Image (cartoon, rainbow, N blue to C red; front, side):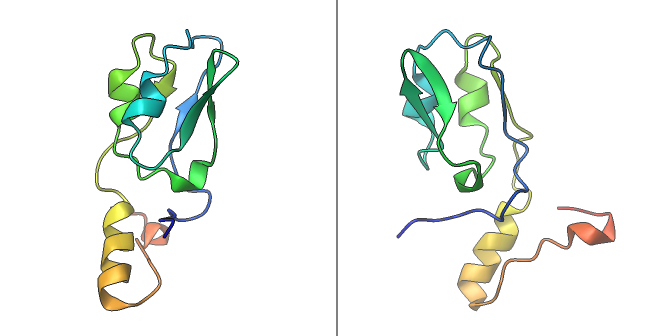
Length: 96
């Protein structure tokens, strides 16, 4: 089963010019968001990102940035547990 994040909400940012192609980001990402192609990392699917921060914390050049934390991931987990659609209520101005 592929676990997907909420569509178009991830804070994941990647600067290809800073990437040295070490591949660490792809190794540490638990959801396969990044891969190494032609000695450069690339984002495979942004919506798979759960904003855990492993990629950014392990990038030696700072090519990756993400606002790590539970964020909307807690809404997804609650949705799985309750069988409802994930809703982090970001429209209230108090996004988790």
